[in-house]
Length: 265
Image (cartoon, rainbow, N blue to C red):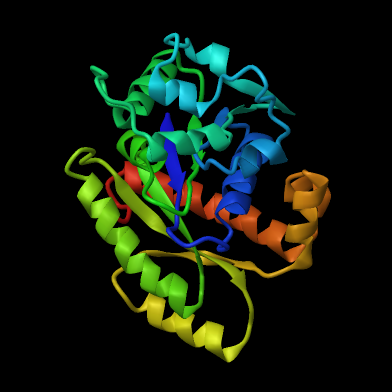
């Protein structure tokens, strides 16, 4: 089982859209068993997949170890074959506003234990984590539990500048999780205009690994969030859907090379 964080410290770069469509395509088009974790207190991924949060069993309860939930009691079906979700809601922000004290195991380590139990039961092939645009308690817990980080990146100055800080945070988390790997940056909202193509050329010439696939800008992405359907259902012929499907293939091929000792670090 591989756990992947979809993370950028800047909002508005396509983190949630990338996490949701990566998870959906892995399940629907590649036959993978996928657990999608919403680690953002806004709960956009949970809303997108219409998760039921009325019973109070969310990521917050996992991180607080409330009633020591057994993982099948927390995870929900999404209605899509092979794709389950661990939802979140605004209560997740309480962990940052008033961190719990006196616990034998701090919340930042509890997701790792939770996913270890999931892996022991061989329940999923992939865990995809939709991250918040902040180094929150939930974000730290996810990075401690994860194997890889994918960074959706919109090519503007603010996003590129923020990438350096994110890389520092990932490096710092390796003191706790030495196996944490940067899989690469994924260029989102891509347009064929000079400011974007020139910035892309500079980024690709640097030390940060960048996926060959970029996700083209299209209104179909925004529309799909209103319809609450993955792109492969809402608009299968749209540029963004084609790009996301190509990206998943590229990621799986990269994963194979990395498993054989040939991948990017």
